[in-house]
Image: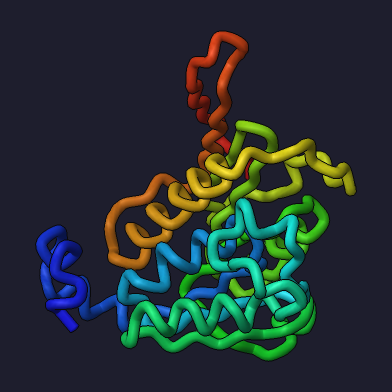
Length: 221
């Protein structure tokens, strides 16, 4: 196993790498963010990953949802992502839960970290409630156009967001992978026992001059 994770072992040693095998996470959503998160974390050495999604692959998903290819249309997203992760890394156990978040929360599965990869505020509000109930931190991520947000929620509340069913504007494929990568980095640091700044919202956007701007906001409790 250590040969497979050689470059990570160089980063933090065999003991930390081995410790990841006992970690469990759940990724809520297997679309754009979820696909990229699953690829990044599914080959990092985390021992158990739960995938929650009710949707099927559509052709318009494929350009920004990297787990899928032409020919996958009509297949269940969680099942396709599970198969792809397991084919890349033999050291991870993946469970696909076909259905909505509410069905997963009733199963009583304990995890070390909950990761949001959904695309709407009402579902994220439910994730926040679930996380608070089970006393588990969660990672928020969202994308729109060329912009994105990431936050590691521990004590602060998602209620600061105006919850609505607003449909997001168009999305550029690279920002999806970028935000998922930031989420995955925070997740991996946390699971490896490294420091992570919690309850701080990172907002990334490109201004009218084409400059990449990063802003930080402390989330209210």
